[in-house]
Length: 112
Image (cartoon, rainbow, N blue to C red; front, side, top):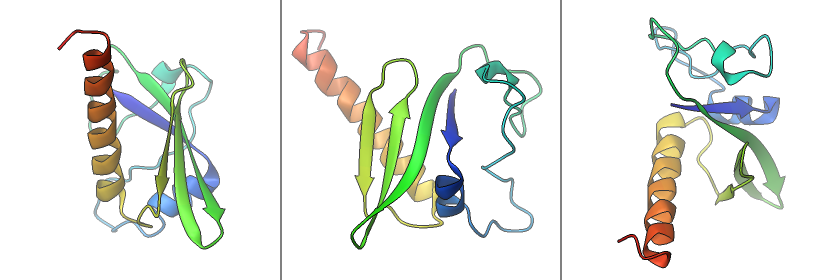
């Protein structure tokens, strides 16, 4: 499971106007820094492993950028012109890029 620790700017950017009946993607911060304290909507039990990413929104000139960094390794991705208030589009772009980067890394070390 992937958990994004969002800055306030990113939380407003990704889910400024959620639908009234929809499950909110952005929740309250955990009680501690331990990722296992995260309350996940729709899950009865905490997942076995959690990968933590930090997410922030930055305005560079007229372009809105989303920056995400993996907490343990510091691996960072920058998304330029990320669509505002469109969580599915951002999550799709994130997952696509993460899978592509993992594939490229595996090719470089001769695993594929």
